[in-house]
Length: 323
Image (cartoon, rainbow, N blue to C red):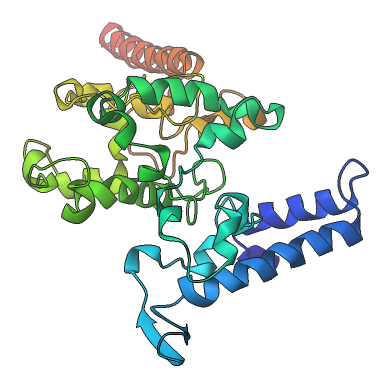
């Protein structure tokens, strides 16, 4: 049964057990009370925002009425409790005034917290370099072109977002998940026109030049070609203008592939730490030419090849002399 548990859920379980038994965090009773409290509070929100319809008592009509929920305000509770923010209460981020219903209209104008409001300046998250990600994002075309209209929430919905690159060993699933983040705007005219009056560009048409297009879309994330690679952070956030996109085959299909510095970065580092320079790449899933090469194996292969040629040449000379 353990083998059927996803790496992310296993990580949650281990983290939960660690928090439970650590002397530096809440006691077992306090932790259970905390989980119970936010789950109960969240349930009050999900009774409406977790369904396509909701009902309430209308004091003006003096009867119970049923209404359709705005689809943009519907939160999938299953996806929420599988996301990175599964242990948050709704009111940790939203105003406490939402406790009352009907909600005051001005609450929709409240400023949404940014990633750095929680992750910035915290030693627990220092290894992920959130501040540097924020700096990169503000240099990206998303920020420079759309200013404050483009926020972290545009790509990373806090109700559903979950990390993939560090927790999912299936590269294909990571590619699909990350590409769907880009396509949530670039293939959705409704969301795209929140930022632009232009018609949503057809991704297939704009990538007509790309050979074997379907295979590339299934095997490479958009950010591999459209961001500036940064060695110090796991996922680059400086999205470049389209004229700076990677178009040369050799930049990916080579020994010093860009993909080894981006898509396969975390996996290759993990393998290298465990196995040394051998099998540094995910060879069973990578299609990169030369991804498994290193200088030592190159030298050994040349020596062996040279010895084989020498034996063949020597054998031929001896046969000529003998005759």
